[in-house]
Image (cartoon, rainbow, N blue to C red; front, side, top):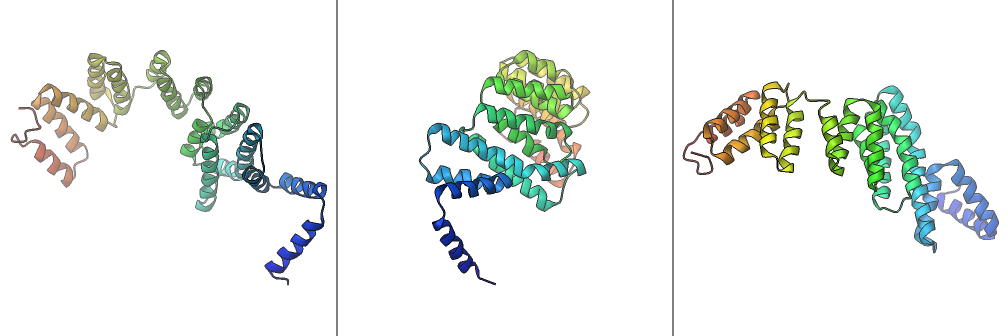
Length: 279
């Protein structure tokens, strides 16, 4: 069998004898059959050929779509089977990461980004592939303008599922849409973390009284995930000089999941000589 060097030489000799039309047909045929080859072609031409701004944008968009086509069969199988082995998951995750890099560069057209979002959203809705974080991050990377973010938030809302609704709420808050954020926030007030999120929102607005009222309500009604809420209220007690309230909250925090380190931390907090604490 000929070694690799001999094979390369033979191929180079044949390529040298072929005209431009034949070479174009060859590259097109190979690229059409394999998205990885197509992606390589676009990357190579962008790096070596004198392309216009429009051609460069087209190239980046085609690379993103080729990456999606390349990972799609594995992602679909993972979604059907409830996940995949580490090798497959790592491969798909790596390709999604490459897509996000291209999208973040900002040279992919609106049309390609919307097409990609419409491809990604069904997998986010299913939530069965085991790559939720990567898929959400990819959807976020595909958004650039406020209208695109709002379209994505509406799409998440339409799924009527807790996790997509949570992401929709985050987007509306990011956009400064107070009414929509509060509307979705009120749909789910179960855990301490839910009350903490709303309390922080009011505090960022400058509504300290409302923030404390929400936090106190959460302390009474929250079902788990109370750490952030207790620390929120403890911070307020520390600022206002209410040492008794501060120690009560820190004690509750310490015994919630008691460990030796937690006990030592609380013991230090109880030291009245600590100048950082209220008297």
